[in-house]
Each structure stands twice: as structure tokens, then as C-alpha cells.
Image (cartoon, rainbow, N blue to C red; front, side, top):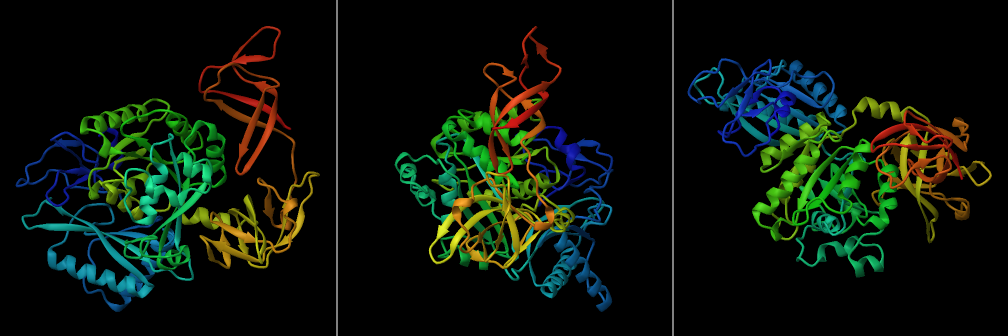
Length: 569
């Protein structure tokens, strides 16, 4: 593990007799020694278990905001104290949009004191009563022994509190799936969502394909959506024990929506549209163990970095390779992630404990990039990915969500359908505000720049009925007998109070990742802005580049920034 991990994670503790770890647990590397940090981040090599530590183990101090709560102990609280604790739990659940993590045996300043077995049992019993009061369930994530300044065994326990579904208000995370062609993206999603391992010939991916040519070629060319649920106890809910998507939504407290994107270079524009339009919370970059970084892998990685989408990496097909080949692929990924253009800290996940740590640190630090190695055929390490997805908290806090919901309604139109006996249906993402059944909105712009009035007849989210849609959520809206010919992808449905206007010329600051020739005035490009795909012409370039005398041509090295003026075609 890179030394920067210790600086990011802070202090140290010792989980269940295993090696010492940093902060809330450090990813385990290949070395036999381990490093621990005191309150000031000092390092100390492998302590003797029987000796007293000079510096106490610490976590970062408890934050007032967020969904993480530290509690030293919860033993026989008074009724007044119990009501106060319940109110506090409601606040943490609200901050985590239905999820909270409790660290039992930890002081507010982050000191890992630990509790004896009897005190820990009583504290967990109180926590269970608190969860029942607010309609939530608790799941013990892990227990860790603390050997600081004590002769008797003392432990701290990390507990996940998740609210039971109420009126279908489950936590929803969108994960875009990236990777080169034939890396196993659709197969992995088929295994996760169907609950059955692949047979090595692509059987698991058949249910994900939308077109005949995809089934025949085995390659995804369009964008498809698959869902994976987790109930309030952290158990997987998928099609193996639920027949319909509606049943999965009803049984789940947390929903992972996978956006399966194309890997072939021919469909790169579709992949870009999926990343910009559907606003994924994070991305899963799949790399085949036997081929390593090949094809469009670097391009997909560059897209995620340019769009500032957090991502984690899954190395697939480890059953086809020798262990040395898998290790070589992981080392190749680590070298790329540490390059100046990425500045990431790779974190190899090899145990359930690592998966818990990876999920928490991935949300807290944009530099952490977890790496999983698994097989969709043998099922090796597949459970570690499920643990990671189960614990992965929302990457946006409740304050940002509240601010978006207070703005005027804006819905991006990504898909358009005609459903018998329902009429015109549009699919997309609500980027701001709140949308309800019966709302009057305007849609546009049309070819002449106008916006047309319409009414939202009904709403479906994850294929089940929903009456209220909140900012950041994806859904389909039924528009009744509204003429489909007047709609196209890239339009927006907004509140009439917004008084929307259009533009045909705009100025943008761009970063030239790669170009085969020169970027010059008059150059034609395709602009992706959210769900809008539009061709444009470069009218003017302002930059500190090398100019050819007498010509409006600029030659820029890779990753060179510039300001440009575009006019839409």
C-alpha cells in the first residue's frame, strides 16, 4: 500500500488479532510488517502484542455532519437519554439518506477505547432498541480488538444501521460499468442480478442484451439498466428469489442501478452519452486479467477522470489465468493509477474486512481506488464485491440533496417510448426540484426554439409505480396523448416559472486529451452536455499555444487546456 494511505487514514487499530491497520483499517498488502499512526500520524513498525503502546490508536474525530456516529458505550441509558439517542439516530439516518454507521467503543475525539464483552453486548442491545424505535435494522460489520493500555480483551464494534423501506423511499445508487470489449461487463452484471454463475460461454449475459445482433455477437451496443437490491439486514435481493423488478424494489432498502455501457470503440459515443446523461454516482471499470489494460480501457479511464466520476476497478476472468498473470495485471493498474494524470491511491481488496474499509474510504476520499479480483464463473471473491456495494454510502450529502430539491423542476429526457393504453412515455433523470403526478411542465426546445406545455400523468421508478420524484432520481414519466413526434432526446422538461431560453453560441474551457492532427478554427466536434448531444463548429480559440504564422491553427500537446468559442450546428 502506498504511504499516502497512512496519511489519509490516520491512526491504527488491530482487527481480531490480524495485522495492525491504519485509520478505519488499511488494505492489506504483500509486506509482513505493518505501520501504525499515533494522533499525529507518526509511524511505528510492528508492535509487540504484550507490551503497552506509547501512543493510543485513533480514528479521525467525529464529524457533526455525515452518517458516522461514535459511541463509547450504550449501557442501560435512562428514558430521557434513550429518547435523545433515538433523535440522534434519526439525524444520522437522514444525513446518510437511510443509512448510518455506529462505532461502539470509540470516544468522540476518535480514541479507540474498546469495551469488555458484557458492556459490548449491552450496548448492542440498546442500539437494537434504538433501531426498532425508528424502524431500522442493524448489522454488525466487524469487530476489532484494541490492545492499548489494557490487560483484558477489549473490542470496538462497527454496526450498519439501515432504515426499513417506507413508501418506496429506498436509497438508490447509480453505477456506470466501463471497460474494454470482451472484458466481461455484461456477464458480471448478469451474475450479480440473476444470482447464478456463468457457464464460461456467456450464458449469464443473455438476459441483459436488448437487440438480436448483441446476442449474436456477444457485444453490447446500447445502454441497458440492471438492478441489484439489498434489504435492511444487508442481504442480497435479486431475480433469484424475486420474479419481478417491483418485488425487488418492495423488498430492498438500498438499490444499486447498474448502467451497462458499450466497450467497443465503435460505440464510444454511446458510452460518453451514458456517462454524461445518466449522472452516475460512481463507475466500475472492468479489466480482463488475461489481457490487462487494452483497447478502450485507457479511454474509459480518461473519461471517468475528465468527468470527475469516482471509480473502482474489478479485474475479471481470474479463473483463466495463473496467479502471476493476475498479479502482473494488478501491478500494471497500480502503475497507471499512480501516474501524474491520475493521482490515485490503489487499494487491493482481498478480504471482507478490506471491502468494508474500501467502501468507507472510497466515499470519504476521492483519491482511493479499490481494486477487486474475481471470477464470474467460479465465483471467486464475488462476495467481496457484494459487501462493498452493500456498505457503499451515498456520495452526496443530505444538504446538497436538499438544495437541489428546493430548486425549480428540471427533468432531462433521455429515452422516448410509446406504450399501448398509456401513450407517450419519456425516461430520464430529474436534475433538480421535485416532480409529482399531475404537475404541469413545459418541454423543449423544439426546432423553432419554443417550449410546449404538457402534464405528467404517472411516474414509474425502477419499473414500479411512484408518486413523487426527487432530485437525482431516474424514472419514466407518462405524458398521455402528447404527440411523440414533438419530442427528441436531449430535451428538458422544466417548470414554467423557469422561463427557459436557448442559445446557439457558447464559450467553453476544454482539455485536449488526444487528437491525431490539429485543433483549429472551423473544426467540427460533437458536444456532450448532460443529456444533450449536438454538433458544433469552433469559431475562435484563445490559448497559450504554438501558433502557425498567418493561419488560425493551434498545436497543443496532450492534456493542454484552452478556451474556445463554439457555435451549434
